[in-house]
Image (tube, rainbow, N blue to C red; front, side, top):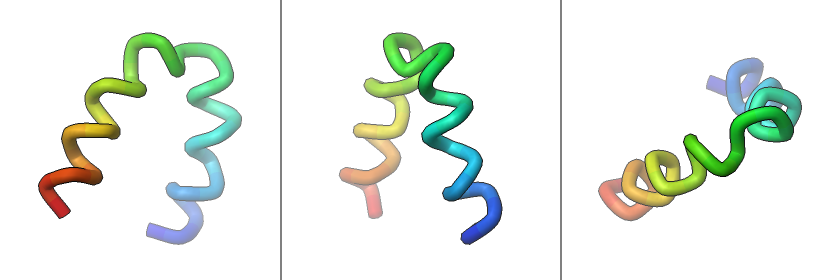
Length: 30
């Protein structure tokens, strides 16, 4: 999960608008 989590910022730079709501929901569930 660490490696994936470190790749998140780079990936979100391109599509944060689309994935921000999804991640927000996932974070809330945890």
